[in-house]
Amino acid sequence: MNARVRRRQLRLLSFGFALFFPAALALQRPAWPHDIPNQRVDRSTQATIRAGKIEIDYEVSLTELTLTQDLRALIGSLPGGERSEWLARYGQVTGPLNAKGFLVSCDGQPVALSVRGFDLVVEEHPRYTFHLVGPLPGRGRLSIHDTNYASSEGTSRLAVRAREGVRIDGGTLPADVDQIPIRPVWQLSDVEERRTRQTEITFRTTDLSASSTVAGSTPVASQEVATSDEAPTSVRRGGQTIPTEPGRTTQLSHLLDRRSGVSWIGLVLIATGLGAIHSIQPGHGKTLVSAIALRPEARWYQPALLGLVTTLAHTGSVLGIAALLWWTGASQVAALHQGLMQVAGFAIA
Image 1 (cartoon, rainbow, N blue to C red):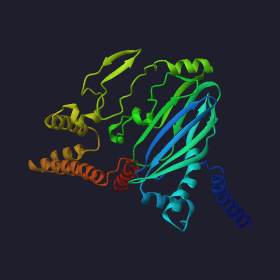
Image 2 (tube, rainbow, N blue to C red):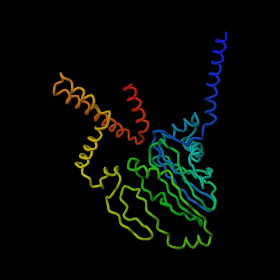
Image 3 (tube, one colour):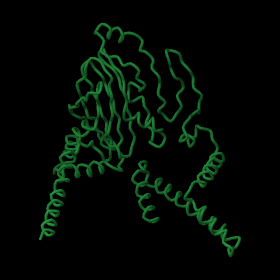
Image 4 (cartoon, helix red, strand yellow):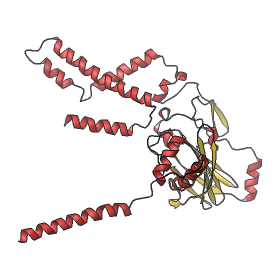
């Protein structure tokens, strides 16, 4: 009897926990930024710091098919009527989501952004420009982080400028987002890709007389950021022009650029050397080949044949994945990598 009562209590406790745990997760769920996984969405962010406020012009460009699928996922059923109503509805729905996706803080204190409206231009694809605004103190350390479309594909740019008696100290980003040429993600280093989404600057508000004096004088030269496919012609530091060497780069991904001057024979030799070093790592069949070779009844060609098959299978799988990525044009490979890891783990188990 006691055992039956104890089992009933355990069932009730398990049932209550099963109901409480999802409810607690739902209540604690944060406001997620706007995202469209595995779809191309091009973004450009122009942040303008004025006296007492920050203005962000957030440009988002996507195809109408992606827009329609995203709108259906957000509101369920699409509104009836003309195409212009769909486009306007999409801007109204996603504007507040994009504002929540911007993590803006000043001296560690969050800055809430609100949507003033949006502009829409339809050329090859719809291009929205959302106008966001938030309050700022007279000075401080400002952090801007765009967390929207984190798993989407496409390009991203970010620029910060000062207006109306505000001065930026220590900024390395260009003042105008149009000065940043569009580059694919695979050409960017981790630091450059992070810079297209987030930055930290120090700003301070000057008086009106000082701002008018600065506005009438020669602008102070800032450090140019190399963000285009072409190498920068010069870098200005402290008013002195320092020429850079054409074609010089320190990024491994730029070896595939034509301006790097590296021959295909050199690239093949580099790939051969890296492949030989990679094969020394565990998990490439060396133990299996050695076990076959050390058997007393093993023929001389059996280890070589097994090693050749292992090499072809390994290289063929890499070439197959590369061909798939090239054919689909995908640049976000995190989901593919996770799936391959799960398949490999299941096969090994």
